[in-house]
Amino acid sequence: MSEHATVAVDTTASLADVAPVRGPRWYAGRDATMIYILLAFLAYAALSIPRFASPVTTGFLLLDVVPTLLIAMPMTLIIVTGEIDLSVASIAGLSSAVLGVAWASGAGIWVSIGLALGVGLLAGIFNGVLIAYVGLPSLAVTIGTLALFRGLALVVIGDNAVANFPKEITALASAKLGTSGIPLVILPVAAVVLVFGLVLHHTAFGRGLYAMGYSKDAAHFVGINVGNSKFWLYVASGLVSAAAGVFWTLRYTSARSDNASGLELTVIAAVLLGGVSIFGGKGSVPGVLAGVLLIGSLNYALRLGRVSDVVLVTVTGLLLIASVIAPSISAAVGRWRHSQRLRRHLAQDQGAEPG
View 1 (cartoon, one colour):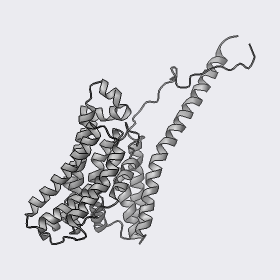
View 2: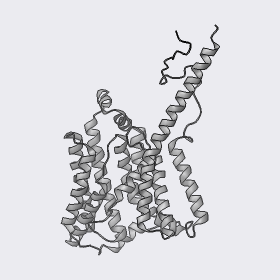
View 3: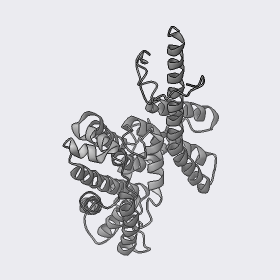
View 4: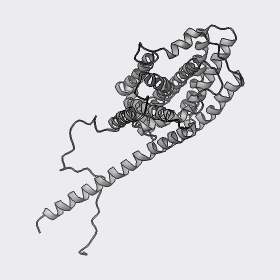
């Protein structure tokens, strides 16, 4: 046998004699990191950007992130399962068009809002049936419905805009809580975030979504109804996207077919930046909340600096790419460090053996 014979080593094995790292993990995870980055950026912006640390800024910033935050909730659950929904902004635009046309046709404002939400619900059902029961890929289906729903919005309202909504309703969309600058609409939005957080982190349904993200076949074999779970996620996505479209219409007092155009890019960037894996199986609502607020704060700070919208879109695209690449690089570094520790441990064991 050669003196330098190679020894095969299974680097995927665990270090049996090495004590595992113990201690609280909540402050060292990806979610906590996003919260630290958000707090650091807010502190930097408050100290270095004029007018950033003011109740007026707080109000406008929170109003800006409301549509993104709403749509990000069902999008988080969908991406955790390894799927995606690219049609959310088009559903918001379609619901805005329906709201405007219904109101302009003489329907009451609450009936018009109900019709807009109903259209979003039907759009979600359409996506859900094709993906969950027909078995089509979510990427292909929602790229198609992205164009379909935006086209339907153009058919419904054309190039027109409806702007004469009741002032008490439009004022409610921008109303503040006293002199705090915090919008009143944040209260129902917080309730939506809480509901989706509880569903994902504290129910059997939520745990099943993580299992689906790792392996849909394995999830099916352990009794999870994969098809029904997907279907209801897309229904929820359609309904919440329509609610975001209604808010967008009332806040800007304008129902147009191109409302919320491009919002899906911001939503997906915020969700991935918040720690949700594009491959499924990982992610949390607190991390996504931090990701949404970070992107919203960054965009608002750039607007205060009179940066053009082209730069804002570029920054959002870069954040989206970084949020996809960074976890892969981190995982590769982790595997390399584990392999190195295992090799050193085996080398020490072999050196300690007599003879």
